[in-house]
Amino acid sequence: MENFKLDYYFENIENFAFKDVFQGATYPWEALKNIKPFVNKMVVENDLHENHGHIADFVSIEGNYLIGEGTEIHANVSIEGPVIIGKNCTIQSGALIRPYTIIGDNCVVGHSCEVKHSIVQNKAKVQSFTFIGDSIIGKSTRVGSGTILANRRFDQQNITVKIEGKKYDVGTDFFGAIIGDNTRLGANSTTLPGSFIGKYTWILPNVQVRGFIPSEKRIFPVQNVRIEDNEIIELK
Image 1 (tube, rainbow, N blue to C red):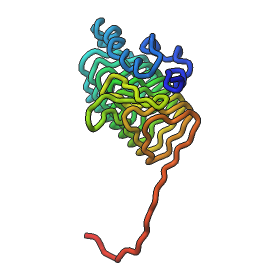
Image 2 (cartoon, rainbow, N blue to C red):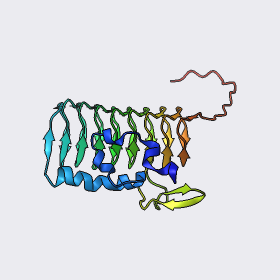
Image 3 (cartoon, helix red, strand yellow):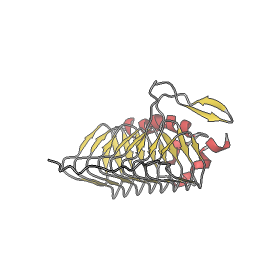
Image 4 (cartoon, helix red, strand yellow):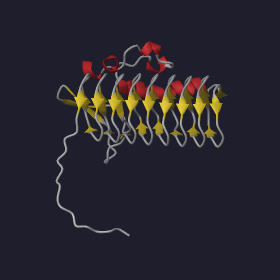
């Protein structure tokens, strides 16, 4: 079980802007279950509509929210509260921030990204056209453009993880990926529901991963390409 504990993936959680969301959690799926009560206590019960940053034109914000100092919300962003966004973040145009998302300090959410019920830790960058669902992103991690952290099985059954040869039910049918600190996911990569990727690991572009990937690894795509002659056709 050691490879599935929070401290295998995340160093210095105490420095996270909203560290209390991890309080009492030993495993990542426990922290995900903490999101809703934590956000409710912080912004819903206090009925917060609090912005300390800068919001551009044509931004839609619904529900309760807390936006920290120095944060820039670009045009045409949609925020569906309740959400918490830290200090000095950049939320680029067209992004969709869905309920129960927690974004730390100095983060970037790229153009046309969607983030839902997830924790994005300090200094993480989520590039354009990505989907982050029911996931935890580590400190200073980079998620490349077009990357999908899939969060639900086709059969809609609960997500399971294999620990010491046995399957363990994490108790929810929505569970994306746990991505450790300082990890990189290349453009157009995909993680299947219930994926765990350790610290300082690089997932190269166009790789699909599932299950457990240890820390400090580099994962390459394996691809067979066939080349044939092509006739000359002038296209319309």
